[in-house]
Image 1 (tube, rainbow, N blue to C red):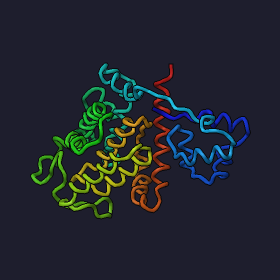
Image 2 (image 1 turned 90 degrees about the vertical axis):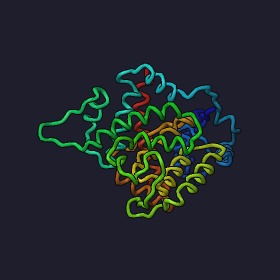
Image 3 (image 1 turned 120 degrees about the horizontal axis):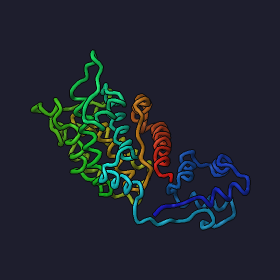
Image 4 (image 1 turned 60 degrees about the horizontal axis):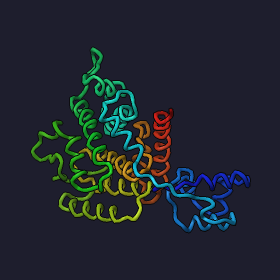
Amino acid sequence: MSIQYNKLFEMLSERKITKMDLKNKLGISSATIAKLSKNEAISMKVIEDICKVLSCQPGDIMQMEYDLEKPLLKLFREEKEMKLKGGLYHQTQIKLAYNSNRIEGSVLSEDQTRYIYETNTIAMTKDEATPVDDIIETINHFQCFDYMIDVADQVLTESIIKEFHKLIKSNTSDSRKDWFSVGDYKQKPNMFGDNKTVLPSKVKGEMAKLLIDYNALDEVEFEDILEFHHKFECIHPFQDGNGRVGRIIMFKECLRFGIMPFIINERHKQFYYRGLKTFELEKGYLTDMCYSAQDEYDKLVQYFLEE
């Protein structure tokens, strides 16, 4: 089921009322206006307030559409099964792996990431040296994305999250350390930037609580996924690889709930980190950045959906 607000914007256009006019009259946030523009669910109170301002009924400004399938997830699965070259699945594999790994310090370029995906080889200049782990984690990310597509419509569980970590960190130099738990929670304390995280002895309980609270939501919206991501990164449940696991979770949950997913560009790494660090005091910073990333990815999706 999806909500469409096309009728609202047609009415606003006919009455020469801008989005900013509506925002100011109702005293609502830019995020709420963005939700209306993206046909995302908002509270019934806001709908009722809009109807009062426009002297209309809810049915005059919104309509429900019932979809039996999530078209984007269906497209990913079809292209994955077909091993289609050059399609949305192909491009997303490369862009998500490149940007997510680059945020964590990988030196591989997007062209090198593409070359690995398309040819299973690495292109390097004569004097160039690339850490083996960067190559392994790139290949691992491709496999993790495939697994994510397979389970995208399933309820998010501890076992899925641990499998994401196992797939991303397998066969790396970290995996050969006795104390490093691939596919399991950390054994030693770590930090997220300069912030302390949950101690190893408390991780299992905090992750269980996070998943129970999240899966108990009646409706999951874009902001709920970001809220989960922030809490996940604050727990920092794994010894390493938390950022990559966290971002693949966000992509999965967007697909699960029919929300346009997004890829955080590595050029915006500092904005992303700042958004996570200040989230409890200023949610809008991370939210706005992710909305912008969503808009960028939507352009790519629309290109492939055009006939």
